[in-house]
Length: 83
Image 1 (cartoon, rainbow, N blue to C red):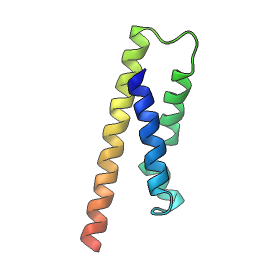
Image 2 (cartoon, rainbow, N blue to C red; image 1 turned 180 degrees about the vertical axis):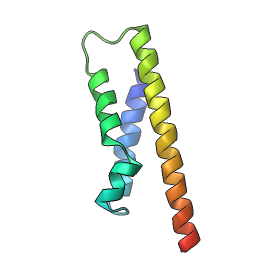
Image 3 (cartoon, rainbow, N blue to C red; image 1 turned 90 degrees about the vertical axis):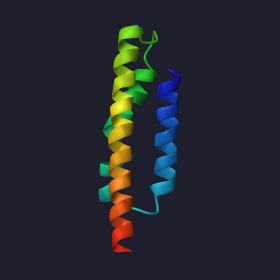
């Protein structure tokens, strides 16, 4: 579950840093609240998820972080190109 905790921390930190830099419309595209909610709900289940569930959760987190990093990088490149 440490990977899920790291993702949750990353999400909150990214949200804090982007809060005043992007429009609310872009915020959901940059940081998917829906995926975050799935991870958050999964980490709150009792009993803790087994190995199969943890593998699925780790896959979700990896995919989500890759997609968000790509989206943020693309946006930063576009902003730098315009700027």
